[in-house]
Length: 500
Ligand SMILES: [Zn+2]
Image 1 (tube, rainbow, N blue to C red):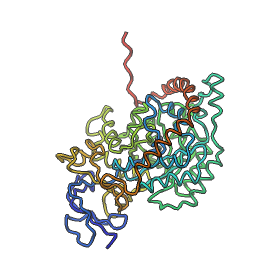
Image 2: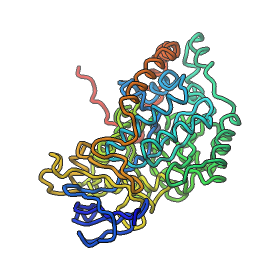
Image 3: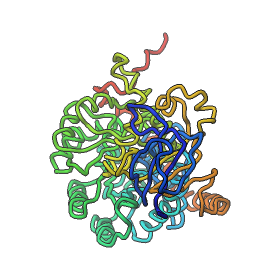
Image 4: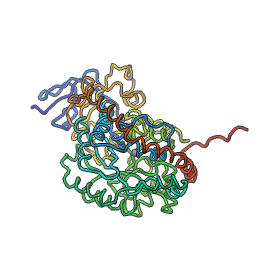
């Protein structure tokens, strides 16, 4: 049978709680048909996996493909300084730039053992069908599975934070105030058209919708996004209480928490996911449990942007489903799901709790596979090596130093592996990484195009960068002060008083 393969000779990690065992995996078409004792399947094309540990593909619950051209651009930036820099980091892009940026992110994810992602793709001021196709084509060319959610807003960053515009001196205020979003209909109509005509299969390249940050969206706009999500069964993701500034600004704008506000306007529900959720309290966790919604935990990005440490054990214990993400490369600055998974485990240990309550290796791996699958709306279809699941498999070289000796497969995958032992990646029954190469991609050509695009975009966005540099000191000062109002939650360590 041409489309029936048996992956034979390897160790298989089919259940993080049970560890890895010698087994064969029968693949039919794009799916796993079953797990069989070694050497017991005769009627299938053999695929040798000697010296391989086979794990389920890691799933990135929150990223931004548009960050691929922007890795390493910022350093000591808070989230708000990053948003202030957004117009020059992400501006002036052609469809070709969106394709290249997303392709760079996708290639990095695949090389580092990730087989599916939730991509909140920058589509300001307005999404276009051409740009959506460019982003989708990048995932098709890399062979990856993805949710592509156009990231949109009907307010600028400067309008989003109450009081920020008034903090600028008049000349700078005019510059900030001049940056406006497009009209809601102009933003939403192309998404409606795309949803109505989406031609990719929903378990390969799925359309989503991402009103970027609630404060950046009017209530009417958020509700219109929700209505589109309901009408076309699109997953909806937003950045939820990522920074202390957002928690404090929500109190000022809405008089309540972000999650309570989202509940009040009808956004919570089964297709809803919130990214980051560092600055949510117990009442918000309760709302997520009662009304539905998952969270994408981005521990590396939260550290890089100084947003603090999300207390995911508290949310998990209450019953919230959690996935793991890297965030985009302009705020992370890599697409390494092994690193994100390890950080999810290790950072659970900074809270003052007994080791039994820490996130362990098996649980971290489960979050980064099945947990993330739920965030993508693909639970039960990806994230596990089991009959009926898609054949999304990562093959690790057991002769690589990371796995020698192989004392404990699950603990070494989470606590040791960094992507260096990844040798092959199969997505939907097809090898998309083999012998260190992504077949079908002209990598030298992509390198040259990416460098050329970066050079051109730096010139195109030079004026926007100069404006952002002038606005940055006020943004920084205002937001540091506003963020202090949210320090009712223990998410950052208090600094010791200065020595006298
Ligand atoms: Zn993000």
